Length: 354
Image (tube, one colour):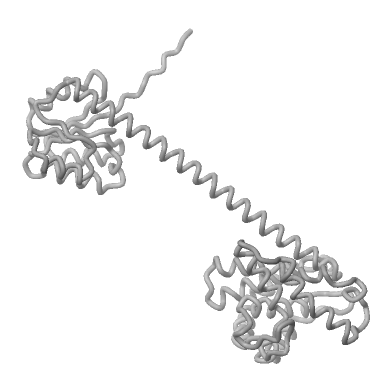
């Protein structure tokens, strides 16, 4: 048994205040289209702004109360009908009249008395063009959504790679790998507290795991030495920010550029006695100052094979003592106010060995 698929007819709205003109156009179009009629502009707008707007409007110009030009203008202003083709059908054939119609967004202009073949041809042409534009717009929308999803996936992959590389560097230093998770979230939380936007704070949080990537370039004999480092050995340790900066290298990616900056500057001190470049105060990029606070706080409060974890209060007290020396004093003050949020992060990303 063969099923016949019924084609849904397009809807054409005819607007004219003369019944004879409505009858003529309806007679031409009714065999091929679903026809709606309106005898003035206000009724036409009511029909057009309904839940099922027409696919095309044939619009007379000279009508009482609201002429066709005003009706067309209002149709083009509304999102529901902006793209619906409007064809003016009028006895006015002056060039200025046609120009005004096209300026208002009309698709075409027919002069009365109309020719049935021309009416059908113009209506069919503009409906087909409208369908093609809608199809193209839908394809663009779908493709744009696909590209956005792909870009999001790529960005998430890049962030995950950065995070895992950061954890790999921490594993070399007998860390659990959760240090970078906590430290980066402390830095992002503090960034928001300073007034940075959510995207800016997220960028810092996502770049922070690269802060110690330079440890990859430090010999195990020094990095994993259980005892106190000699002055010469500590000088080697102090090269890891520069190493990390070189490992990341010049990048077009904003997040990798920021990761390189954090790797280079997170051991600088507010008093200018940090390393590797002895920057002081606001010479130190904000991202480096933020990560310095988060890095030290986590180092103090985390359990390590060589020490028990400090309490949150004791760690915050040390930051306060070092405000204006090691750390940006404004950032320390803001960080102390985040105590509850810090404890929440510690609970969520607690040491695996604890």
